[in-house]
Image 1 (cartoon, each protein chain N blue to C red):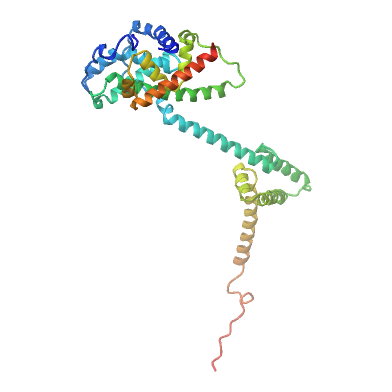
Image 2: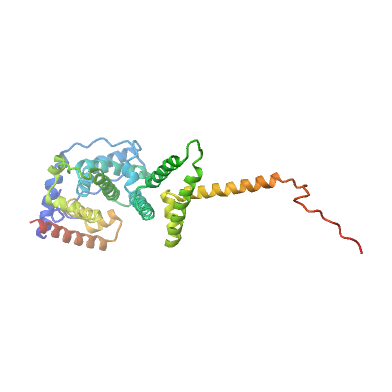
Length: 179
Length: 182
């Protein structure tokens, strides 16, 4: 037997032999508890580690994409800019004048176009990232939708305001004459 | 405990017989084998408290499959196989817990060592805990419990040749770790 094996046996005896004198505890009743080890120890541990890593990587990717788009890692920056613009629009109103919607909408459009052109410049992936960032495209699209909605409403309104039987809008149709 | 050289296999007492599914026999198996299973687990997991917890979990798992156990293999070898799997699960769980602890403790000073853990540890035991659990288990089954390679192979459910190579690898790694310290 080698020195290592001899030392190993001596050491194991020194540490483990005192166990022989220790009392044997009563056996734990089966199913008394659900061990966290049972959940996290086996395949669960590997799965949990992979899941945590995935979440961390996704969060980092979203933060980086947002930072690349807005120039800041703070998602509140765009909101702050809008608030400032609202204040500026209010200040710019003449006394007794109402409505800052157009003023704010212009600003939103400018920002939206800038982001969209940036996304086109970087390819389709950039668009997804900026959406995930939750920064401006929604607001921008919303503003566009409003504009579209306004147009639609007006179009519908103008269409409905015209009487379909009004001869001024519908020229009289003359029946073809028989030969 | 006796080493393999002192007690040849044929001189050791014949293993007790148990009836699968018998409540009384399982209790007898528990009384007869608890200390040896605990001894194996102490060399595989970080401290005695964890080893005791793992030993109880071993018997819980064994109890659930007690009706399916076949007496053609040693009951204690079967328990050792379960215990080693429990120890492997525990090591994974501890790694996950340690990662959580590191995140929680970032920026704070590390806590001092647990005295109850330090008291139990020897250099050899510390080195064994760094080995892969199946290698460490092969060492303790061979050099403390006095199992033959064939019995270890039966306990771990692997060919004898695998046991021989695991033992050789474990000794080599143990020697390297202990050599670095001396």
